[in-house]
Length: 354
Image 1 (cartoon, rainbow, N blue to C red):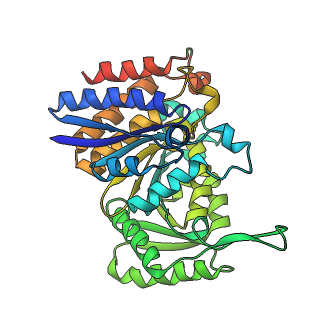
Image 2 (cartoon, rainbow, N blue to C red):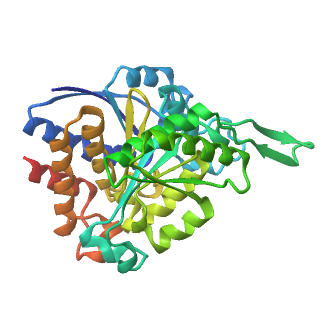
Image 3 (cartoon, rainbow, N blue to C red):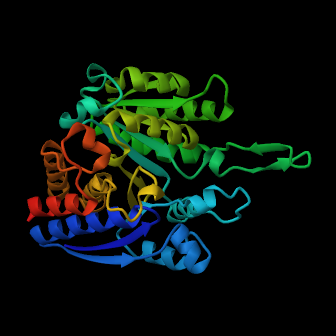
């Protein structure tokens, strides 16, 4: 099978974790007789430095002419520490999502048996956790009208959603629930926010189309509490942009390390696959970053973009082996006796595949 994949390493540790993931993907492709054409492109701070834009048109053309996008990370402290900066790396990610029509972020959260005690939460609370958030990505407060008034002393950001935006995200949630435990939770703040009331009534109207799915409606603050109390009570959760941004980061600590969790951003056509962690600039160039989240994102890519389930399963298997055998980077060394370099973990994974 011919696989055409846009490769966007990005900033910070992005290039390092992407390098290891490319090694793993190439090994999988060789084993299963696939051919990967990697299409390299710039984004984030590296793109600003090169061409003055965080998501240049050249990069967009590479993405739309590919079958999938594998992405590293965006962010640079030079911009974080400059409130007056007009162009920021993160603007590239928002622009990319919008231009590619990536309206749904698929964020799984699960536990690894060998790392169950690495989590800050008690074993009995998190065992068996296997949930998926679908976060709406291209609407809400991040894209609404914003500005300042009263000579700059008052600021406002507007959260706006249309029924169609909600329906297309909810449809993905219902469809995913049908492949899992047929449980769906709509997360909102309908007791206060008009936009949340539209979310709730839209999802309620869709229930008749999916009679096998049991739907629950919970306020975002209650979900924030229950995620640390009984995360294994959830299966598929759908929510708007801001709520999803916060809750998925909260859920990520359940596994014990943000360096382990993959994600996908999907629309009607192309999908983008990336680790949930940031660019971690303090670790850039040191060969110490955990590549496993990016590698697991590639497993999602094989499965979701190409329908290659066996290939994705193999990647998950060798990642599990690396954890059970203690071939891990320094973020997980408390659970093991030795820290391995980013490149050494990548080499181990490749060795198990070939």
